[in-house]
Length: 305
Length: 133
Image (cartoon, rainbow over all chains, first blue to last red; front, side):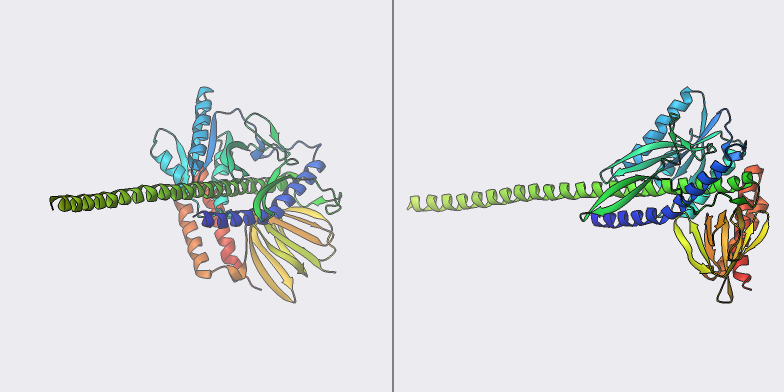
């Protein structure tokens, strides 16, 4: 199972790498457009900052078990956040992604769940689209005022952390603010990259370096109102954020599974060794016992003579 | 001079090669792009992208996004894109019927918005197979 999980880590890595041209171009264009629109007042539905009465929490877990503490950590983080929100007097709604989260929330009818989404074995754009559509309609209809994403960030092959990122409202610069109000700017957006260094899987995080090349000529005309164009781009950004969260989650899940299985295998090997030793000792003890009986019996017989 | 067209979706590069001409559906109507087009940026609606190369037209269904045209290089960023030849007609028709049924059942602002989007996507896919002109 460890080898199977290792193969899946490769696939997760490839998926992320394939998604990079899209995300990079998007960030570039977003930045360029924003530069040209700096002076204008933009008012887009997805950037509406409203007083927060209800928060939507997207909880991303996996479909299968045998992955150590992966699913539980995410769910615990979500529960902690729900506790925080309750204390602040803010209501919440959950969008649960993944069989494990679905099972958990189904057992707790007291928590209001908006939708249960079950993913396939690998995150696809269509899944991200489903979640994005749901979130989009929730936000635009003012059912929720803020949307947060609870997923596991892939730190390294042996470590992954559940994190909470604010997805909506988007700040007009495409910034996503952390729960503490720290901005994870599009400039400093991180892309994680699994590579093979010296034959071993390792992790590189790189920050997006803003490239100012002449690809986008400064006299770019807008076919439609710039507002309309930004309007079209925000859902794309939303989609790619959600997809990336799904992919990171998947990679973390697979890495946890790899570790859990590796530990299980080691434990099983040790258990087998111990059991073998105990078994052999018993066997030898029994044989020794039988030999002693036979010898004693033989001794006894010769004595009578 | 040929145009270089790049169609990107969040998880893969759908198209990355040279074409002679494209016709793109935007929010404000269809636009045709020939070599040496002026640089513009436009939003792309859920609709069909037609590509001409070697005297033949290819269709691709695009699910909304954004396009940037400049210096004979077109970059289209969309949520999802499917080549007309890759879509199964039966399946697309079924999905269209399902979407229509969903729209009729939909209640409430939210469901109607979602159902509408799904219907437009399904319709685009069906059109992409048919419109090979």
